[in-house]
Length: 364
Image (cartoon, rainbow, N blue to C red):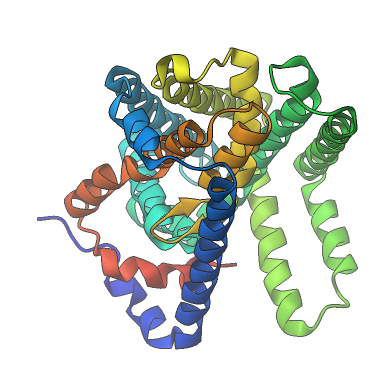
């Protein structure tokens, strides 16, 4: 029988977890949810929203495209697992890919159900299954976030800079703002990449310099920053070889390619209601990626609001179709993984209720 890998180690964290943290996340989630519904209500109210058209839009979806988008989503989790297996090679040269994939699916299920604190589930489960230190997997998680953020910035910058070449209809002033924003995102990407390369080649020197710069912080905050910087420096160790760096970049590209394919499939499921070429899909994805930064427990990210606003404001899509697209994207991006994650959690012997306490163990 599978052992309960998440219950015993987190009991102390459950006892020491302050109640105020739970209420903090609940209050934040409620506020974000209320703000999201308010924004949607304002958007839809101003366009004479027709619920019958909205329901008809969903009922006439092409389910074959939705099945294909589900397959693409699961493929993105597989490429994430492959990338993680490269990032953890300094501590586990031959990791078990199934353990990493299962932890990835369970981890993203936790993100959907618990919000951003669910991010900590994946490194914890991998550290337990692969019998490696938790700090090493926290480092892998931090490095993965950097690569994903670089990719998001690149896509977002491309989206902002390409709006004027797409079917989106903008005024000259707004077009200039979007193009300028694209350059800003590109510059920020270059700076972040430079920091990553500096850590790769001069990790110890960069770590000492950053800690010296942060030494003026109060002791409690400095200790937290020290753990974070040290974990990041450890994570960069996995990409010091050119081969490992190429593999991480390749898996990142494959991951985001499958995410783009997912968006393409969802758009095509609406048939003639959405006339999007690949450029339009990439622009749309750029905005959605930024909308996914905010996670609402049980709901998902800000993708729903962003999808409605971008489709109606930039592409002049009717509000009913835009709302239907937002629902479909939310379901495919956040909900479809939940049954798989719950089944894997049962198979792996994970107690779902105890996962809430993992944040207090993993947080640097």
